[in-house]
Length: 469
Image 1: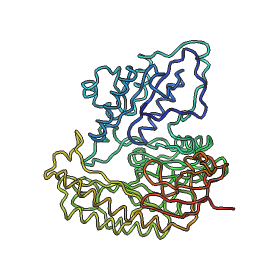
Image 2: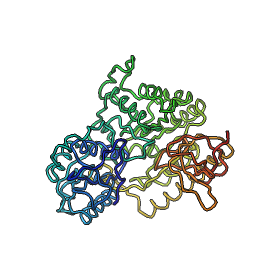
Image 3: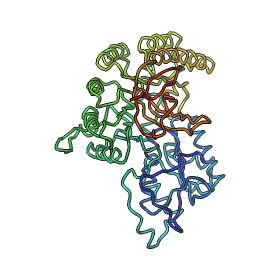
Image 4: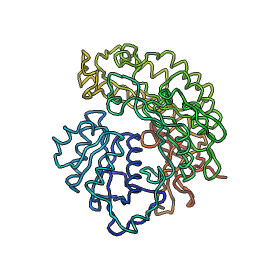
């Protein structure tokens, strides 16, 4: 089954006649959080979770609709679920295109849009009514994050929904609406519960983390004798006060951070060890003319100056970003500008995408589309440059002792040696590199944070051994 099997920190055993729900979760981490919340609501209503198609009374497919390729993947996943189970409810971003979904798969039972939790739950109740009985009624009501689709040691913390930007290539505001920030005390309460339950790494996500609280005029809420604002800097400072079960500061990683001026204020928190020295900033391009057509701020020169300042304050800070090549009207000079900018910026982690039209996006009407062959050639050139930069940056870490969070511990080999894989503070799960460790002690477990001596590096990953003593 094409899904992350639902897991729970307090999962009760299925009861006889208890209805079971399967979940296929596609797309970004924000969609994964939606899946967790839907499943948690359903378990509170008496449903059990099924890790496969065969055991499910109904299957939910949480779709992605950001790009045409993502829509194709979503339609394929819906088709697979129908083939394997037959009783399918569709939700998520592509749910906004119900007609297209029903045209491709008329058998679907119901279609709902992004983060429409109530409608999804109602659809499940309608097509797989919850079992009734004295035992079902006694199922404990879970807290908001009892069901997790990530490993126990890291968790996504969604602080807002929607976006106020109007980028010409994006339809997120159409799919998820304008910015809607959560109360800061609710976010902090959730973070506190996650850490108390064993989370050692929090990944803060939204469509625009830097804009958190703009819609509420950065309202304050009482928390632990203080009154923090719904603002990224206040949130970051409060998250840095949390402590794990072992008494350490959890890793707190900020994603989708637009480089507004107030971002400068979180860098000292990284230098102090209260925040993980990592920023995920969606630059998208560097050429002023391309950024203008994208309807994004063109302050690339100022950004380079700020990057230098951030590294002066926190030398270990890792900057990741993503870029679009082949945007309509992108000239060879625009692309060379981007390459030169990347050479100077020396970003730690870079992802790249070939531009593809998204139905409903303003960019579709722009003149001078870039031929596919040129997109491919530029993509290859960009990846060659960023891979070379990455290789040099990782090579510089050889010989250093770095904190590593353990994601997976292998079985002993024929000589009894155990290997493990994890990540440094410069690596977010799923999107960045890994640290591969040899001769791991038998008592090392998933979620542990160890100190590793780096012995080798390639363009993406590090290799080493746990430090002695």
